Length: 95
Ligand SMILES: [Zn+2]
Image (tube, rainbow, N blue to C red):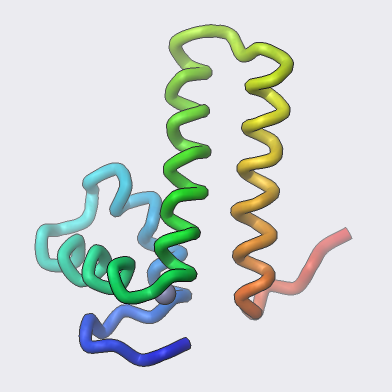
């Protein structure tokens, strides 16, 4: 992936994305991560996938999931995983 001045790489972003979305990163880390996402289309896309998944999970805690929502959630998770694989991470495919 392209180097940038934020000092965060894409692999690191994948690990921090959840914390970033939950607001659990320290301010400095949060800023670096946000900076990286602004410059990196692949991490920006990953962030929206995660956000979609998170919103679905949030909603599912408030109300029972409909069949459609269940399918959406499954698809969102699979999409996020597929993006992850497509970025050439070292994680071997299972199954
Ligand atoms: Zn990135």
